[in-house]
Length: 210
Image (cartoon, rainbow, N blue to C red; front, side, top):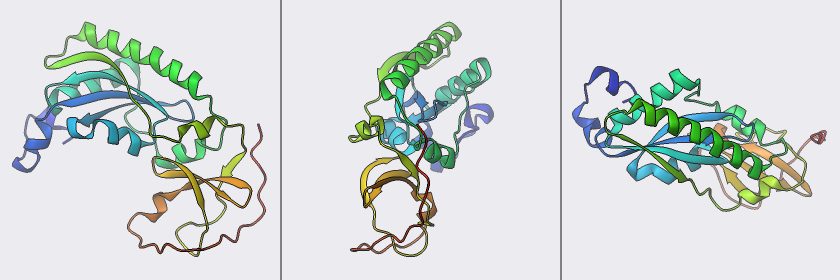
């Protein structure tokens, strides 16, 4: 699917997905890193929510998945914007103080540069746009002046009692007693979990420095 714009070949299984309209987006994460990416028309909002973006802008709309990936590659080659950010890095950066308004302003400026470049490139079937992504509810918790540290236990084993405040991609901001933690739930992929009134037995940890 990610090389269809280079090879020109689309399998019958992927044809319906690839040939539908797509969106090109610029996403910003908690550590200030930017990522250029694509989303099918049916996955426009959810794709960014799953990615764990803090702020994002849609910078182009394309007729199909071929045109959008041509644009994606051109942005990477011309502007050095990556196409992937590790999930572990996204989760770790949530422990740092986040000025969401400042990050959103930086995203808007960078998105304007991307649109300007795409306008000049004139890619067939791809139209530059300016459309702000609306993040899920609960992101205001990221701006609170609260110390957050990485959850100090292996969430994939044992029992854990987490009061979840907000989800950010595969990570959650949760409290245990009076402490706030960033918990990377990527380790739970493919595992069966049991819901219940469990508790967390945690070692003492040093609070993040502000």
